[in-house]
Image (tube, rainbow, N blue to C red):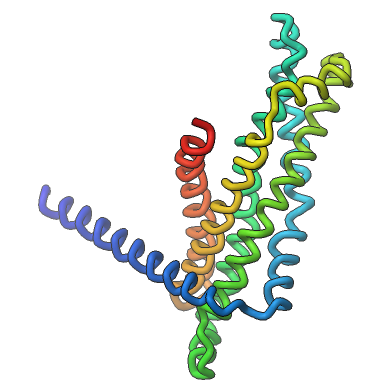
Length: 257
């Protein structure tokens, strides 16, 4: 009874170490390929696809997140005479945590899945093998443009999300909770600092790299067949989200000590 359990545990550990090693090798190959940048047109297409097309869902997510957060805290703050702090608390929470994390989760679900499905489809139809036959490095051709696009576009999405989340909080605070608009905006000036925004932007760059690397790795290691593409896409989204939440803790520990 014990021996089969230990065997399964050992296989899982070995598989985990194998996958970790493959990811590390992919990261090394990707950074080595960055010495020669891909064509600008290719990168811009990825930016438009991965970043601009995500604006509507990010806007909806952060608008209602800012609204519901303000709705939950406004009356409690008013009860204890702290209504002058509502705007600052909302802006800090949005800038530090809600905006980068939720934008990263949305991007992992939309962008990470798209990257994995696209590259995975190329893998099962042997298009990646065709790239190697034509002496084209798949990492430089497929991974690098997506990494650059994710790392540059996610901070821009977070800036957009910061504004939308704050606007949502402002609407609820002024129209629902009865807080004066000047009081709300003045509390943002008093309590929020630049690091509350820049810290979230730094986080989003790491989240973008996680989404791109995990999505490309899952795509490049997709098993044969349509079922393999589906499993790889699901695994990409789940793994990206888990790594985003884990890395968010350590990044917060470093940035907001």
